[in-house]
Length: 193
Image (cartoon, rainbow, N blue to C red; front, top):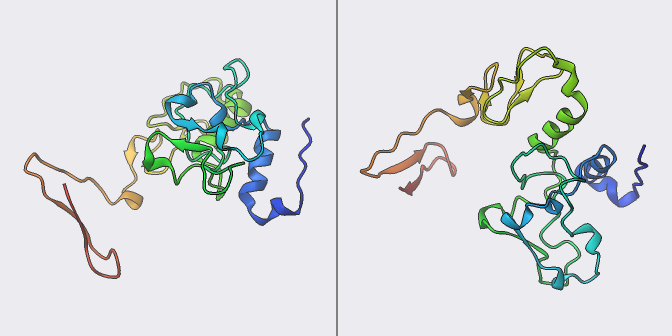
């Protein structure tokens, strides 16, 4: 067993506690995956305190993330300004749309839960094939169905969850606009396509 040490500062956010418990159950920092260079840039020269052990990429032999995609929303991903000198970043996403996602401490991501379930519960449903679609995984508490990521539903995560997403959006080659009634205090939001 790996001990988990938490000081008073850790209890300010549940996500900090979840991050530290993640280490205890075998999760590693996402930004330390050997494939990270495809997804993030590391600026170690911007670090105020040289803490390379928390930022270096680690060999695949040490980390088993089941060939899943890089998870920007993982509770195990560090903040863009971790260990940084004032006004600088130590981690920058190659796709700027994910910059605000990294370092979140609100909750574990679906993929964090999936990795833990694959590691500790994969033997619970031995007699069944994994027919899960769209990134889902076999539910170890109910082997005949899958646990689905946000936006998907159905026994095998085969259906778009219209309760969350609102249905299909069809766009043709003539362009147009998307209207979301009720957005922004009753005024529709319009975005040219």
